[in-house]
Image 1: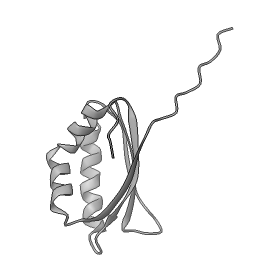
Image 2 (image 1 turned 30 degrees about the horizontal axis):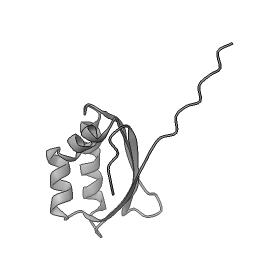
Image 3 (image 1 turned 90 degrees about the vertical axis):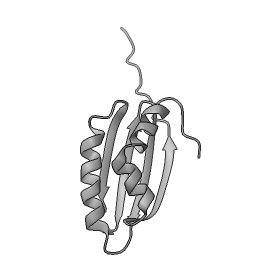
Image 4 (image 1 turned 120 degrees about the horizontal axis):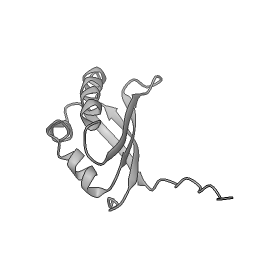
Length: 106
């Protein structure tokens, strides 16, 4: 899947390994804190599914590919994705945001 060069969003679901969801939630609390100060990370939200406690829904919005790559290269993200101890599966999609309608000038 090709990462867009300019502004884009990522929507998806992460599934934790059984009995690892609480630990994964703690890591996501920290990645959310760190993402708030990452240049080019416009929005970053992860929520735990109330019906399936091993599922985490996420929405991320980046100014472009460089910001996304910088986020992915953060030590906590590299460790989380590289070790595979907490995450069983990730499903995601890159999408372009719909721009707000311009207000007609009277």
